[in-house]
Image: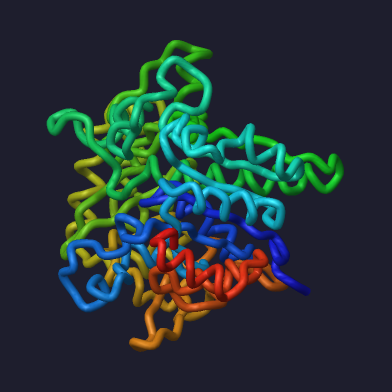
Length: 397
């Protein structure tokens, strides 16, 4: 069997993170993604030139969302470069971009123009506030969307104020949403024969991931506040606790789990206390219950508790750093961490977050050097060697 998107060709104008993350997910699943870069390269390609990988134009943050793509360079300010794009479009299935709305139209390669060239074209546009709406022209960035979407208002501790999540959450959520949107449009095209615009607003994408919080507010009026490290259920034993040498998160949400937890902590006496008789009373006495649990957990290490809890079916997890996590035996039995050979030596990258029985996500080629596939892609579009040489001379590519 071939990969799910084998045979799908994508012309990728995206930059930085949200858009490249989207096209990367599709590349992992077999799409031929042709990344169009300026002659200087994507902003993330060289980083701060602080290490050898960055000096080579293979900065780790760039590789993380661009490995497996082909790279060509085009100066989109030149009319001949726009002619190249229009020549490529009939042979591709998808165009992806994350410019501010209107930029591609000004270049002469917006959706309305390209769909006339290729009616089966799927055009995915990622922007802060979408192609339609009062804020469509507003530039956006990850932190801004985390703030405006409500995500920061429910993250962290009240004493510290609103808090961003520990990664570019709005960018990644938007990228995943865009990849899903393109996949849906490709499937729909199989029985309609028609292409379409996939309009991804970053603020909408984050809202989609906060469906529970938004729906509860609209149905009941509840205003979610900063959750600290507490579970969304607000149950006291779904929280973060200190151990002798670190931290653990418990996810004890049922009465049988609670009874097993208190037994293993040596605090079966607490089960008889009226203030802990059921979840409403436990929530009302959160502080007291948290203190009982944490004082007991401080008596052992995180590893010791992890073993005890696993043997007694008590949901819990150690708080690990990324260097600790990457060493977990879990990853040796899965396929998400992949080794890619490059001319500079092997590197490890993160692939698809799921496995498939047949031909799932994987990287089939090393990260591309800037413009590495320019001649190859132009030749596929029908340009002669002389024409390509002339475009190089004119700095079109």
